Amino acid sequence: MNIAMIGLGYIGLPNALILARNGNCVLGVDIKEDVIEKLNAGIMPFDEPGLEKLFMEAKDNFRASLTLEHCDVYIIAVPTPLDREMKMADLKAVKAAAKSIATVLKEGDMVILESTVQPGTSRNFVIPILKRTGVKRFSYAHCPERAIPGKTLTEMVKNDRIIGGMDEASAKRAHDLYSTFIEGNLFLTDVTTAEFVKLMENTFRDINIALANEFALISEDIGVNVWEAIELANKHPRVNILKPGPGVGGHCIAIDPWFMVVKSTKSKIINVAREINDFMAIHVLKHIKDMIHGIEDPKITILGLAYKANVDDVRESPAFRVASVAENEGIDVVFHDPLIEGDPNNILDLNRAIEDSDCLVLITDHDAFKELDPRKLLVRHKNIIDTRNVLDHAAWMKAGFNVKVLGNGNNISCP
Ligand SMILES: NC(=O)c1ccc[n+]([C@@H]2O[C@H](COP(=O)([O-])OP(=O)(O)OC[C@H]3O[C@@H](n4cnc5c(N)ncnc54)[C@H](O)[C@@H]3O)[C@@H](O)[C@H]2O)c1
Image 1 (cartoon, protein in one colour):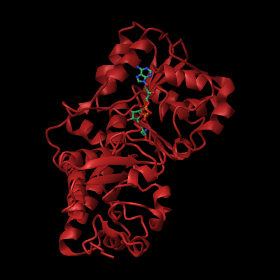
Image 2: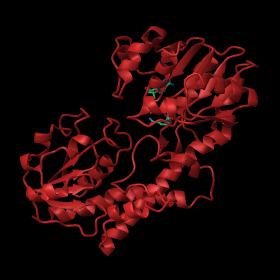
Image 3: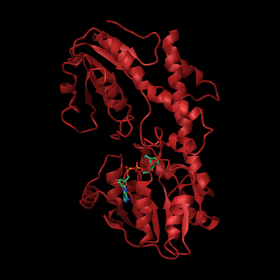
């Protein structure tokens, strides 16, 4: 089959390459010239385990271009960021992708939307753009993606998926395509239910994390270690509390709940969960201020810019929120993340980032941070805040560090 993948990011590129490896002729389209140039030179535009190998296996059936051409199937995997003012999905990229498909759409083609959108987007927004072409017989389905960065290639193949069709025939046709590479179960429904289910999944996780964060705040007040308490609570066969932390990031959990809220005046708990998770940055600031109390012109080092462990994805990362609230208090902030290169003025290598530092703040639980030897770290003041509870605290204290752990009510450990 000739398949066009529109949007070659964390979701679109692996998906395109899996389809190409499976023998389809895949045209990858993106608006970023550097992405197209890199791919045509065999360079991956971002890090994802196994992506280069997949590219080598798929490259004979894959080409990247800035321009869309006619294909049998068009899959849209463009970003749907949060419109911060309106607190709803910014559909500009989806609209542009649908309009470009409309210029080449022919009778019998199939269009699939993988991007996460608010319920009603397919029926009220995308399908009408395609219908206005005058093409009468096309199939349309929404197949929201569930893969997670860091494990994208495995999850794209192994996970169960929901397929929502514009009609039964569309759902069945999309099922036939996805079943060529997905080993998980495929469940068919209508487009709006599929859109809603995707948001429910991420909202469920956001609320669960908010509950864990609320437990962390309470634990600090009552002198309990939340990490131990959650582990014990999760021994109950029907309890599964997620982990607290400095806030929620990523392109999904931190924003998708808003796509749900905007559709109804009835949601309450979803708003509150978002508030709690965003508040955690201010709570981390409270710990920072305790640690640097009395220090003139304080400087802190944020360890980890990525929103989650062992990936280079910084979208919606809590590291930025913590940095902003700290800078607003006049605290100098620098970053170190072994997986991210960036502005050389404040994303620094480890030694430069920690020299003159008055407090290290671990935001991302990268494996590289767990392996740090605290005896070798030359800082101005030996303070560390572990917002993920991943460090060997005894070793850090032995090396002379004051250690604070988010959610541990037995907290401050002085050497
Ligand atoms: N990354 C994830 O973990 C994940 C998981 C599940 C669902 N999703 C959803 O999948 C969708 C894509 O996410 P992503 O992480 O791959 O985004 P991304 O930002 O990594 O990639 C999107 C790509 O689309 C390109 N693009 C933008 N507008 C375009 C247009 N008009 N035509 C062609 N290309 C265009 C961008 O240049 C970019 O390269 C989003 O809706 C997201 O919510 C993402």
